[in-house]
Image (cartoon, rainbow, N blue to C red):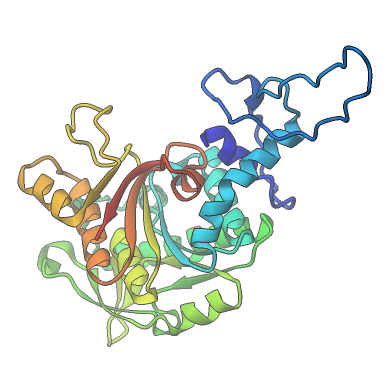
Length: 344
């Protein structure tokens, strides 16, 4: 099942407000499908009975095609039904309206078929935009935002008050029921200063997770939308890396799967060769790649986040290409996936 199948699946929930023109899957040159199972007409008792033509992808009706796609999806739906899936949303999928609609639709569809999605998000581009409007320079060190008191105030306002509520509204509009949270709500996350606090300011780490508020929302079929701002024991807010928050929440919830949406295809065997995607690897293998220098830059904290969550009981962790429409459905409901899956 390929991308066209994922697009077909988004028609399961009729309340989706987002519609995009899709190429007729029956004529797409890159797709092939198993022969469909149309009902045979009874053969009349004549000398030369006319046999029904063989059914092919070209002769199948759009309705039959949808049925085939749904039938092929059944084993994956059965596998993940009732399981918690934590999705870290960011990167290109957050900046493009079309990709944003794709992610929202995918989350709602997964909830419709019985999965329990939890969204975790950052909002770097939006933060930079507002800092620029207020003439506050955006400063980064080792890939982390330097967060002084003024910047921390903007981070809280943008992530908690704007980005989070926009995502909640979009999910609600798509037909599900979302609830927005920061790490401070329900004592979900307790932060501590980063070891590099002297250089980074109010950049924090996750000291403790209390998933009780999330569990009650998940049990009542809500989609939690969590932003990566949390306070320490004294009430001081901290900006925490959203990948880290997603990994820690996945571990605390005993999630079946952690998925990080990125701006790359996944983990590459050769960082200079986009066609060298590693589709599946275990913890030992990915650690060896890091030791050999094959994993570098911004991919290092993402891989470390995945490894840590797997060590705490998450079944699989995937780093997928958020630039691909419906990458979530491709990762969960197909054998091919949409990036790199790391196993324990």
